[in-house]
Image (cartoon, rainbow, N blue to C red; front, side, top):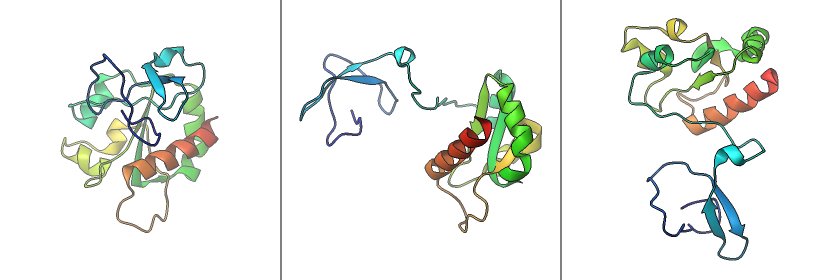
Length: 156
C-alpha cells in the first residue's frame, strides 16, 4: 500500500480493495514503518475531502442524491470572483455539498449535454476557478487543488 513514504507497505492479514482509499495509522515509526487500518471517523483533525464514485451519469447523480449545493467547475463558468458572495452564503447554509470536475477528454458541459441537460439545470453554480488558464484543459488533480483551496478561502 502506498502511504506516501519511500516504499509501499503491507498490512498483514488484511484483504484490501485495489485502488480504494483507506485510512491507516502509523503504529511504529521506523525505517520500515508499521501501519494498521484506522477508522477515518476517529480522526479528530481534517482528513481530506470525501470522494464518491458512481456508475450513473452526472445528471442522475445531482438529482438522486440529497445535495444542498451543487457546484460545477468549468472553463465556461462564471469567474469565481463574480459569484463569490452568493456562493459563500449558500455554502454556509449547506451541509451536503457536491463539487464536480470534468474529465481530461470532456468538460462537465459536454458530459451533461449527452443527457440532453445543461449545467445550469443540474448545478446551482458553474464556476471557473482557473481563469486565463492558457491551456485547452487543466488536469483534474490540479483543478481539484486549485478549486478546493479557493472555496476554502471564500467559504470559511
